[in-house]
Length: 117
Length: 117
DNA sequence: CGTCTATGTTGACACATGTCGAACCAGCCG
DNA sequence: CGGCTGGTTCGACATGTGTCAACATAGACG
Image 1 (tube, each protein chain N blue to C red):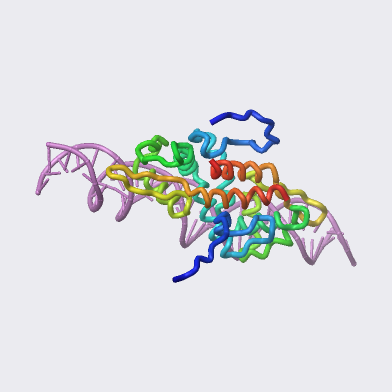
Image 2: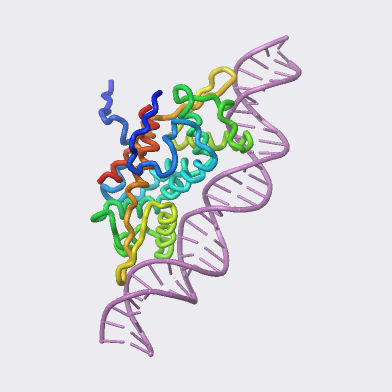
């Protein structure tokens, strides 16, 4: 049996606050993926739609009114999922997306702590 | 959920928390610019270098070691400036970039508040 | 099984973006 | 003035990215 080396509140899956020290190349690479995922208007609207939905979870059919075709919506949701910002689950006919709060909190901390210091 | 119309100290130059309601097209457009600016590894390293420097301010010559040519550095700094994340000032021979804390705080709030709810 | 609805995947294409070298501007200094 | 160093802008190019139509897949339901 193995011991879980946890204890970090998962609020730090990646990198230190941006003002603590210059990021290394790999840190920057990892972190940029998350920011890039939110760097598109359509994705931002999709993400916001999921986040503001009941229980931070929404069916694709509920959030598809963002002015682009259905394949494009699917494409963007996939990007958000690959970035770790959303997770998806199929329940019967519909697919539900939900936000990943820990990742969101980590990104927020990255910025907030850098702003206050 | 209750609304607190409290005095927000300029921590809201753009948009509500991502989970408050779906962003409008214009809100998403504006906000995406800021996230996109941090969505590149080189820019992230440059920004982090400035933010972690003495007084949140650094000369270009101090942060140019990110593995790309000097024109590329200049290009990225310009992008960060256009996104409102940095400001620049020439003092004699050198040009200094400094972080814009209020914008940073706003972005952080956007995420942090969405994560906690 | 067959069909219908809800999503995801593929291929193609236009456009945006990161990158560099070369040329260009702004102050210093001899 | 004339060159020197720090930085920006320009032009060009390769690659990445958003988008859609067409096709493919997954369950539901008869």
